[in-house]
Image 1 (cartoon, one colour):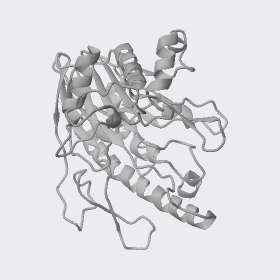
Image 2: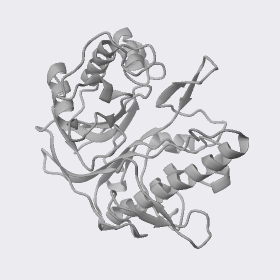
Image 3: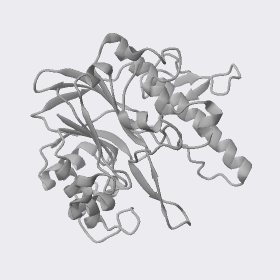
Length: 347
């Protein structure tokens, strides 16, 4: 089975309120890319992936007027994808949903959120992801109230072969200091956002660890906007959110049974001077050059590692097979500022 995670930039802009594809020459939201161009590129990429399931980050919006599921299933129908059914969990207010597009002949997923519902006071014991998490971010004995702007998508899935496993789709809040002015304010906002991000990852780690203790096979995937050695604020806190979710930080850092595994994260942890994989490519404002970053991950539990899975980043320059096909190479650059990550796994 092939499972993918893919952050599709401005996917919502490619659909009208009825979920129909807007295949025209108007701007898509991506810089210098028309809607028709992005749709064509996405069709090429999704077709090449030929995945049994794709965890789509920044999926089309879900609200009283728009349907994420309708838009994605229309997209799959137009593009002729076998991953032709879609499912979402808790909707959010950011126009960037988390959704799974899947082949119903290969697996059957259902939204299965865990944890207790919370009121405004929240809970410090892994509440439901649409609730409130209480956590002391700055060690002042006064817990802050943490919310996900994009609640993770929790799924229980059963493969056609009868294997049951858990999937969690993630889009952790960015820690960029948007709107801050001046060096001191930028630093203050960056540290505050970093603390919130780490708290979200601690919340997610609590859920992951509960499943690992129960022996649930699981996959955690998506865009963490974070990674080992990604920025200087990691030194201030001693670890990244990715390391927290993997279980490489804390009381169980040496307990293999409670660790998740991702080979790209492991490579990035080798040190700041080591070569690192990349899953995203952004134009630096005012610099007229690109920055690459490792932001997207597929983490799996130890029992799934034992099945010898194969990971792949579909990077148009770093993956020789992608680079060798000009149509695919250009489509990957046109479709999004992130590149898909896949795992091939015997399920």
